[in-house]
Length: 100
Image: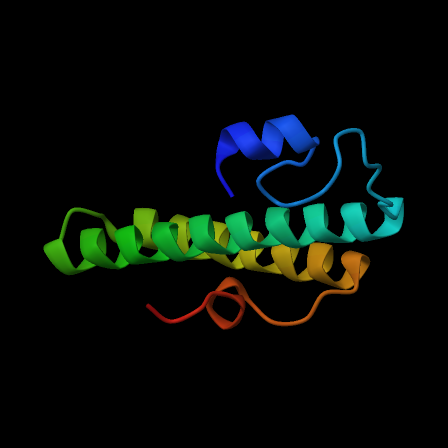
C-alpha cells in the first residue's frame, strides 16, 4: 500500500489508525530504563578495564597508579553489582548483548 493510499484511508505505515493509544505499564518502562542504564554502565566499565590493561602493558603507569586504578575498578564493579541488585537484574552487559 502506498503512503498516499495509507494517508487517504487513515492508516499509518504500521497499519494502525492515527490517534491509537498504546497501553504502557510504568513499571515495565522503569525496568527497561534500569536495564539500559546497567548495560551502559557495564560497557563503560569494560572499556575502562581494557584501557587500564593497555596502559599497564605499555608501562605507562607507576605501581602506585596501578594500585589506585585497581581499587577504582573494583569499586566501580561493586557499585554496578549493588545497582543490579537494587533493580533486580541479573547478568552483565556482555551476557545481555547479542553476538555480532
